[in-house]
Amino acid sequence: NNTFSGLFVGQNLITLKEVASTNTFLKDALSKSTPLLEGTVIMAEKQFAGRGQTDNTWLSEERMNLTFSILLNPSFLRVDQQFEFNKAISVALIDVLGTYVGDDALIKWPNDLYIGGRKTGGMLIENIVTGNKIKHAIVGIGLNVNQTNFPVSLKNVTSLKQRLHKDYDLLVLLGEICSAIEARYLQLKAGHTKKISLDYMNSLYLLNQRASFKTKDGFLEGKIIGVNSSGQLEMETPGGRVFFNNKEVEFIYE
Ligand code: BTN
Image (cartoon, rainbow, N blue to C red; front, side, top):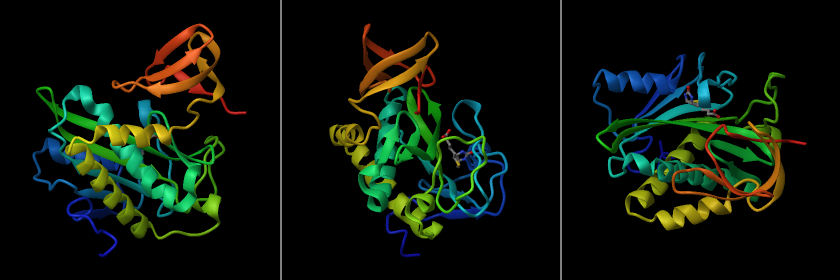
């Protein structure tokens, strides 16, 4: 398949008609010591128990969207460098989405992909660690592509089709994503973390913009000024500079 133009990511593509979760499927295979090539992709036509961040579920209409997981073995990374990995995957996804929607595609820290201020996709990266190294990374990606009706429980979501009024070929898009992830992953492996970080910052949703946020202590007016090397969100607030971990701060939509 010539849309899979890389060397290893996506070269071994396994499509499942139905599975609980492609991330869980890969994790189970690894725990049974199934030999799997690096870059193997498990794609689901239907996921009936898709998982999102912090025990959320990931809902996706059957065969309308991309729901897949990629196996990578970034054993050149220490556990404390896992956010570097997150950044490389995030910018790869923006590399692709940007070709469709330009600057409208942004990364909403820490794991969401936004188009025009609405959630279009998410990542769930799960690591298997040995010693202090990341032995395997299961990169789970859900991307809303051709779905145009969303359950009312899902707020502030969109899809490529809803945005651009066109249908997209899922395999073509998957091929583009695999190539982009491979390129960014090799860039990371080669140590070009500065370039990745710069591209990440340039695609960060709400960077340097005043906005309202919700934290456990209440509402907060502030602006995002960056993300530190441990992946914490850095904000400037009336009370000074503060750092947040995932789920400690929520964005408020008008
Ligand atoms: C999030 O936004 O909370 C992350 C969503 C990640 C969803 C993808 S779909 C493919 C892979 N398998 C899963 O169970 N989850 C990820």
